[in-house]
Amino acid sequence: PEAGDRIALIAGIDVYPSQPLQVCTHDAKEISAALSMPEYGFSCQTLLDKECTRKNLRQALETLFRKSADTYLFYFSGHGWATDIGVYLVTVDSDADEEGIDLEYLRRLITKLVPDNSTVVVILDCCHAGAATPRGFARAGVDMRSVDISSSIPALPQGKVVLAACRGDEVAYEDSKLGHGVFTSYLLQGLLGDAADSEGLVSVTGLYDYVSSSFQSSGLQTPVFRGDIAGRLVLGRGFLPRSTPILN
Image 1 (tube, rainbow, N blue to C red):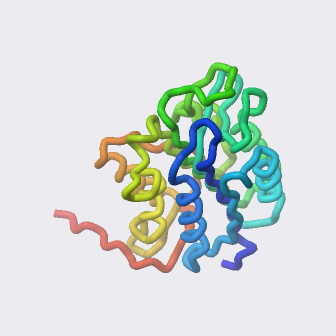
Image 2: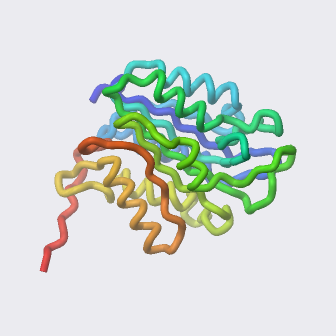
Image 3: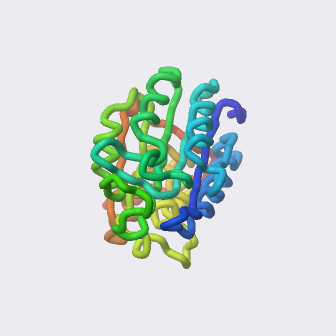
């Protein structure tokens, strides 16, 4: 595919003023590198750390979804936050009045701007630094959980999907040896070919199945998959085919 057919926005934030993270920008850079490979052919824009203000991210998302493309992908690695009002991707400049990017706003962008026959893949790797409330957040809330994503994005149009892993405790689920969040580490392995099928294709469902089964073996939280797919949404092609197990 030509670069214009597939566009991606990749965001990662480590430098939160009160609860910094360690590997989100590395996650974002590696995801961008993987999606830029010829097998995927995405044209990627990255927003990292201080670039990732609420205004910048809103503008970048709106610009992304206003462009004409066959496939849109948005990846976010950073804090997630849920209140009784909404569920948010926490930007670097978030405070009690402006938590960040509301997932309802993201859902509206996708449903209002994206053509019916285009594919959208949203991947959220929301890290948590323990259960403490981020400083400056006067409003009550909790770290974003799987249930919050399911409730805030109840129904997307066909061909629009969300993959998410909302980890509960940054210390347990960020692996400094990997240099990645665990979810993104599995995601990268899948993108680099481990999720390929017998034809050498990496589909959205194949990628989710790979990441989900990797979590099962580690005993960590199961990732979330939301969306309605007809047939296979192929993200990448040209990988070494995975041999199917021989049935006894």
